[in-house]
Amino acid sequence: MSADLRKRLAEHNRGKNFSTKPHGPWQLIHYEAYLNEKDAKRREKYLKTNQGARILKRMLKEYFYEIKNH
Image 1 (cartoon, helix red, strand yellow):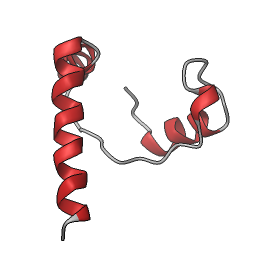
Image 2 (cartoon, rainbow, N blue to C red):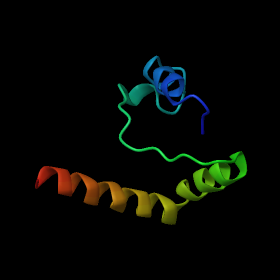
Image 3 (cartoon, helix red, strand yellow):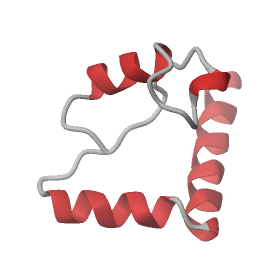
């Protein structure tokens, strides 16, 4: 979660995040915006669960399939 998406992406690409450091460089392919922090935190927590991760993965897979076939 971040209020400054460009800065957060740059931090990942500079290796500032321990968990993503060995996997860069990163490109933004999906983001969600929320009006309040409580909703954003709730969504982030959900996406880190197995079910949330599966749903996000399926959504992105369908998106890339559509791009590839159009």
